[in-house]
Amino acid sequence: MTDTLLLPAKARSRRRSQQVIRRARPLMGTLVGVTLRGPDAVDLEGLARDVFAEMHRLESLLSEWSPTSALALVNDSAGTVPVPVPPELFDVLATARGVARATGGAFDPTWAALAPCWPFHQPCFKLPEPAEIDRARALVDHRDIIIDPDQHTVLLRRPGMSLGLGGAAKAFIAERASDFAVKHGAPDVLIDAGGDVVARGCNGTRSWQVGILDPRSPGALIATLALRDEAVATSGDYRRCIEIAGRRYHHLLDPRTGWPANRSCSATVVAPGGALADALATALFVMGPRGLGIAIASGATAAMVVGHDGDVRLASGNPSRKSRHHLGRAHVTTSSAPPPGTTAPAARHAPGAARRRHASGQPIRSPGLNRAS
Image 1 (cartoon, rainbow, N blue to C red):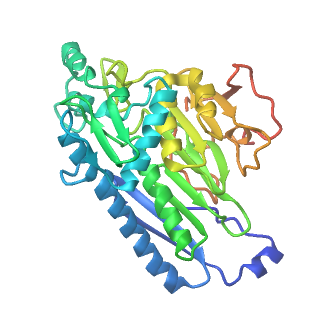
Image 2 (image 1 turned 180 degrees about the vertical axis):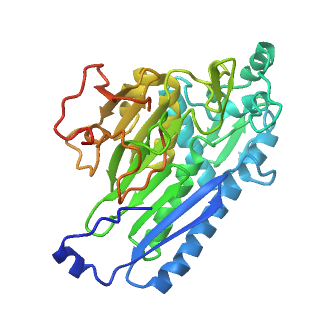
Image 3 (image 1 turned 60 degrees about the vertical axis):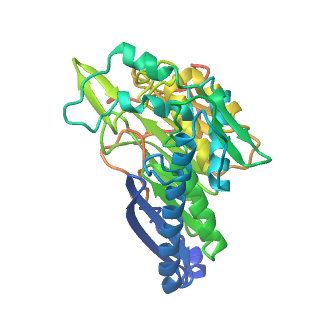
């Protein structure tokens, strides 16, 4: 769903010839929604099919779950020889490694060596032994990714290492697919890849409206964003999780410890690029509120962390940047349902009053950041 609020009469008459289509398909382990605007509905239908085909192509290159993907070939060759990779894998991996370096390994694309320790999908899941975690964690180190920009090759330095790009590839694919749509005649695009959202152009004369879900109140929103030519990604502990002895264990691991991160309930990042937003959101979730400054310094336009105490902490990038949205100016709400005309892709917050603070820890008092009435 996208912004469906009515435009003013004059704007409506100028846009009368605009058609809007919304299509969704299962892809990348989630439901991916594509919204396109343009003058011809038939052309948009054909383009939507091509956009999904492009996303499928990219997924076939970047998935660690496909034994024939370009990523799988790198994993299979760990500790042996450099592997030539397609430009798309090279680009997303370069971004992922850059975020790993900037965050001190809070995000690490070599985390996948830990995946066998945490089979949340198994009905008889039980906690791994610490010794099992330690053995796997010894194979996690982004500094052992060798990228050769001249030869366009990638090598994992040690046998047993494994790349997993689930924390960067989804939004990267949405971004590339959005650019594909723009290139082929639809300048106004919104792609929601299971909570990772990429916007191009606008929704009529308005920005695209995106809602961020409350991590502890299903169906409620904690913020709404207005996006143009940006990406937003949210990482939260509520999607794949299990509670054992009163403690929540989830799929977002701290690569430095091998155990589920526990410094936040959700983290949201707005950035110019999809892979950057996705990777930084994962890292920010792991780091918690102390990582807000790192996220901004690493290229985020805005960032938000919801803590276990219910605090919502925000940070914004360069205020002189002509951005259509900053989370620091988000509309925060604890209403029971998303307001009309928004799409709610990601996150969900502790019940009760949201306590909003800047990265400094001081309460925010901004005229643009208002509670719902």
